[in-house]
Length: 129
Image 1 (cartoon, one colour):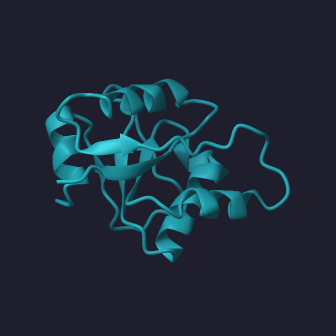
Image 2 (tube, rainbow, N blue to C red):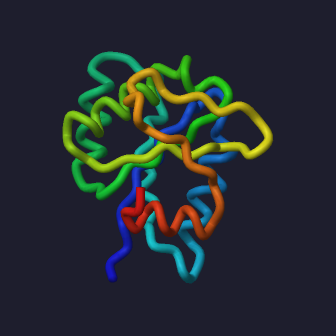
Image 3 (tube, helix red, strand yellow):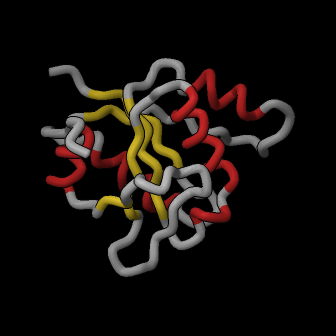
């Protein structure tokens, strides 16, 4: 089975370390996904949402990492909105097990924040959500 190409959406000001941990999991032998680093390194100026749209063009799935301040992260909210408008599957993943994790403002009411374990991640990437 081909690995899923995953775009990781995260709050760059607070959750970059967890994004790096998730990206490292893509390198594990039994990983069901490849991490495509589509992060925008420069400040969000001009039509940055169009840059995100282009970077999402060849992905299979968006994982939105949810941390304490995700509800204030405009970039994460925009990326989830772009996934929704492009009909790209996505799910919300708790970035921490010991902190309150908030949803991006563009998340749907019914979007659940899933617990991050290796087994759970493989199931979620496989489509069980």
